[in-house]
Image 1 (tube, each protein chain N blue to C red):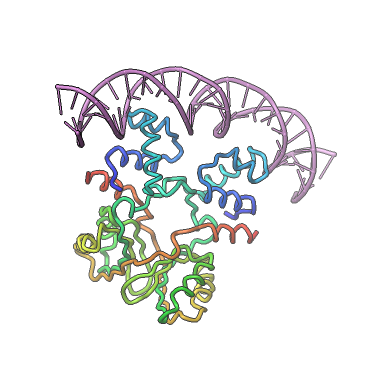
Image 2: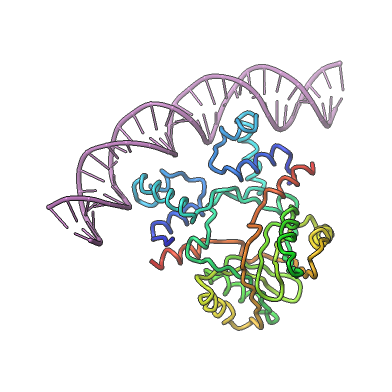
Length: 156
Length: 156
DNA sequence: GGGCCACTGGTCAGGTTGCCCAGTGGATAC
DNA sequence: GTATCCACTGGGCAACCTGACCAGTGGCCC
């Protein structure tokens, strides 16, 4: 779905100040409340906005170490490996990819030592041929969406 | 910060049904409203909950292609490369890592053809020696936090 | 012209929020 | 044993916001 400038401004506003309500948003955007309500409904039902869940910081939960693991899977083992990985709480995300690896997953751990335990658990499963892990040192650009929203809203 | 079982249940509840308010949450959890309010304040001020921003789906915005690029940077160019990458809207996330690559970034694009444009823009910068890209085909485990929250809440 | 659609500005009842309070029970310190 | 602290309870309050309506207006397309 394409979004227009008003949608874009609304998304940016919500991203910056999530606690504001529909009424306050309508005041900031200079439109009627019903308009904001209708736009929000449309953005949600069209799937642009997936939800408003809390953003939880794994570091604050006691998992300050993040790593990315590239996995190589043996033929036909994909479904089993996925099920296995999704059963590991420290696996926050899993993608299947083109390229030299077959899967890429994001891991967290309580410490570098604990990361060993997590990796052992991840790769200790038949079907995983090889794994290479990159530990995250810094996160200069945390997951963001605002610049993309602004670009999408400008491309009307 | 460590969280207890009530915090964990609250986080899971909010993650599953973000639209419920404090009052409804207190009913579901079987505690007084003030307790939920106090827990929420603590979770937010301690940084466990970073916020309640809208989760925007890049695919619904017209960017259905996701890729991960591993970048090799020449000595001393780190800061410039970061600034350059953070100026590209299609770069949703950037990490510096250990291992063979120096940086890992998450990209989105309007199509596979458009991905070429994005990659050209990303790597067309002095200091980036080499880039290897893996296109995401499937996302069997979308970014999630609930299992980790449950584990953290159980480890009291 | 007629129909359609989005937006405006207004109303309404009902629910929720943020804030306060006194009282209770458990844990800890003296 | 007693005092202190802390989290939680259950209650109450005014103010605000929500979701739902409505009629009226203007732009756009057939």
